[in-house]
View 1 (tube, rainbow over the protein chains, first blue to last red):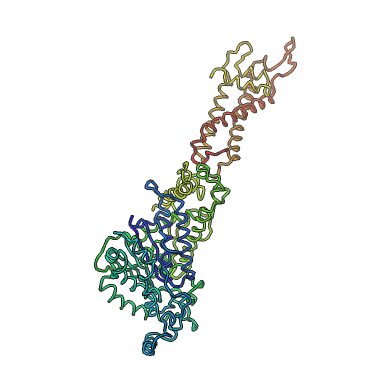
View 2 (cartoon, helix red, strand yellow):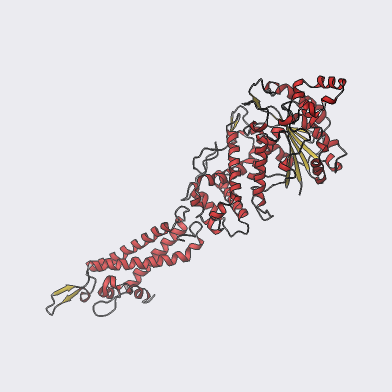
Length: 465
Length: 157
């Protein structure tokens, strides 16, 4: 029962974790039995963070009703996502509603120390309120985040760490929190010998992804965030990482990802307004975690990058992705979107009377239960996630997401095969569902497993996957 | 099969009368020496009903054609087919003079026809009897065979 501890630092960390949650829900196979998300972000009110936390909570609520055993073939929600922290967030001390100068106790410093502070930090830095993070200032973040190992929650993580467990760190390089948090965390994990289980943690297999600029923000003189500085910050951080991460082999795998086609978001420093649409970069970053989970390499840092088969396309369909990526995601995501679409397009009056529902006594009480409401809410999140990627730049346009009510004409660039059958569309879907009916001991597991089996056969027969 | 089917048909002989019944039992005017038409028509009703049930539950077997009224449509089609089988069988005998004269007409001592004893309405009556019987067969076969249908197990309920 190996665990993969995933530290998601900053807004990008949270968004990548959301993509990972969606991949795991759809049944993308993970090399670890359990993943343990740990989010490090002082901006606890960020919409990106709260959306991720909500999605993971729904995932766990759904999974807790499934009681997986070895006999189950179902891969939907198969990987356990363990919650060890409240809202998955590693608390940071003294950052709530505090100005950086107060955190540093500048007012109590002597004149020489104050002068040093003024040399290292601008007045804007010192006056900066850390409620919404470090606003793209890694120099501030590197000071405030240098406290990972002091919290009880971090000690709990260290105590829980076992032989063969792995660690992965997600961060962006062009902001404040991620850029500063990653090297500090990596250093703590690799060399701090005052934390519990330090022998195991210091020698654990560690992977990391560093997300290079993939979006910009609109120019706003009132905002501390200026995307014009993203590239220069990235260069500076890359140079630092070369010396302090790569050359001393702090991590075993270091994934880099970037894109030169970028969207420009509204300029929000943080908080509930920081709600960036999901992006293909985050999905691919989540795939780096999957890739890492299967690796048993440990040694000199291996650097990995990602490439598309057709790099000039502003709209990515499956044909533009490499074969390995398709192998990872094509079947699971298609199965899960089929699962989601069924309940969007077929009326409850119709599906409640199908053989698969009647055999298992899945009646309107079951379909209106809290469990099913949570599942439907998660499915909505999943569709919204795909839709956001479809509306971003660059567009990841894998599926036909408009409400066509066509069960199988859903994959862009791939036409479904015709089958020699009387049934078509959702009637054919029901025929596949009706093949796998039975009398369940656990209705929720039966229900999710039924859709897993039926959609698996559908993707094999209709799409030749 | 013997006389079983004929006996069942005779439950409905008020629809088609005793003379047509006698003809269908094989009465040739003297003896019951002709073949019993009830058996042939009954077997056709059984086979037609079986065919329709198999078609509904295993060939059409459609997840959108599984309601009670879907089943009722097939039941009515089956009954109607058998209604026309029963009607056409007997009306042919009636029109072709196959039915024994003593069953067809009431004659006076001079041999003149006093009245007809079998009318085309009796043929329709037999058709209706066949409709009812075929419907019974359809219901029986449905409840025997529906359990293994992958889409219509709960049809009609």
